[in-house]
Image 1 (cartoon, rainbow, N blue to C red):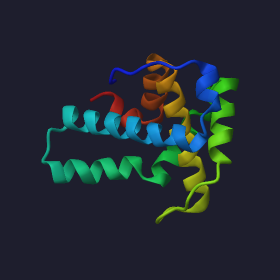
Image 2 (spheres, rainbow, N blue to C red):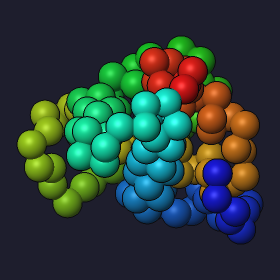
Image 3 (tube, one colour):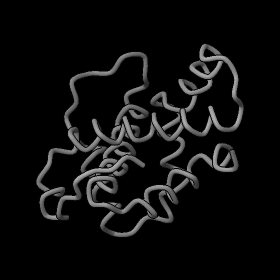
Image 4 (tube, helix red, strand yellow):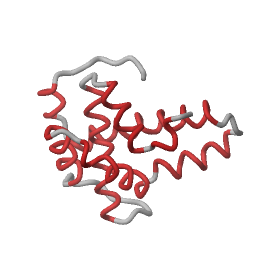
Amino acid sequence: MLGQDVITIEEARRLPPTTLAYLGDAVLELYVRERLVCGKGARAGVLHKKAVSKVKAAAQAEALHRILDNLTTEEHDIVRRGRNAKTGGRRAADAADYHYSTAFEALLGYLYLTGRQERLVQLIESAYAELAGH
């Protein structure tokens, strides 16, 4: 992943879950796009449609449900905070999917900011096993 300044766990915990989700959204988008480009090499329009299917709220909610049993207590806490966060509103997503997708993104943002790249990749690859092999 990209180089970044690692912040402490305490600093990351003080950030609003929506801020963690903001970064986590970008981390997931980059991961999915990278895997699709390396695995398929199709035209950008085709890749975009495939990426959207993986990063939309319903897909993220499903991805989170795939890994919930493998999360640590600390990670469950971040997920809970993200799921319960007040958000500005959703577009075409079901309310429950939107809350779970925010939770998933918050977890990814938290792991990224605290420098836990290995765990971050492990969870994304577990959540999106069909992309991991590309």
